[in-house]
Length: 161
Length: 288
Image 1 (cartoon, rainbow over the protein chains, first blue to last red):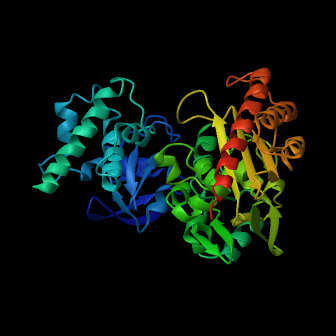
Image 2: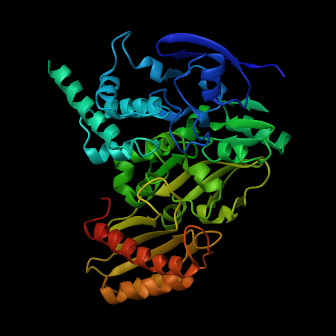
């Protein structure tokens, strides 16, 4: 059967790819577009390792059928840095040792960005709830939560100048 | 498998009639895990999200219309809806992570027909109606009459849910939904309990509807709890009677999330607390 043509914008670039109807957007991002940041952990929407921002909404790309992305605007972890200049969340994850094996990290970074985009000043509880859809089996979460809070402070300082 | 995103309700009905193996979806938060677990793939997956009516949430002449495919985050972000139907909106906000709530819908939660679906008991206590489109046009059915058992609904071939209609509650009326899960977040209800309570000017209960989830194949209404409440103040004695009635009405199963005895007891406790919470809000004027 012929494949489906999808046009979308990923991290600011217009992108076209071919996919199968039942292919997940995660597989299309990795196998067709060759963006390897989003990871498959569970493939059923439980672990958040495949988190992306699709038309402004944080979603698990494993639950999205790739043809749904036609006309969409997508942000993946590859799009959150400004060129060589890391996003404050990425800096803080490195400084705060908020990762060990790193498989969950792209999902946490994207989910944390989605949180800070809508709530620049979250409480620790709000961070914990916002990241409840992301599983990490290495860190015990504490360093991740702290790094997000430090990043939020740093971003507020940058805004305040 | 084919993917189709029709622009109209009529096109969806036509696709469904023409192919019994076709399925509609909104967030696919149940469909994808089911496919991955080995359930046969549909021949056509019909994306409902490109039809505006399916994703809109609006207040229309005293009735809330909630598109069957609207993501639940559109409900939790809607302050006016949350003021009118706090129990329902709370339930919508309990289903899965932020990632899930940006895709999952009330239509999917209803038609997946899990006994533990969090949004169904609060829809039922609020007398919500489902607008169903099908070969014969549109019909309206009580939400309570849609699920018929785990994974089964009363929808006929070619039919799908378009939207929900929920009347704004009258003055001094409010709802609540509580559930117990084995941890703080991201799990399936051991028991869910919804209550909708109206109080009269003297503070006595004038109307009450109590519905339990996850304790039977479909939502359980508890008329004995209504009887215990109506005409009386929300006292500890009355709440104890409500709890006993709800524990008695529950007919749960034993599984890894809880035993029958535990679920019965929790059904009583949650129902009592849900009544107290709804009554507390109703006493403050409800959503008005």
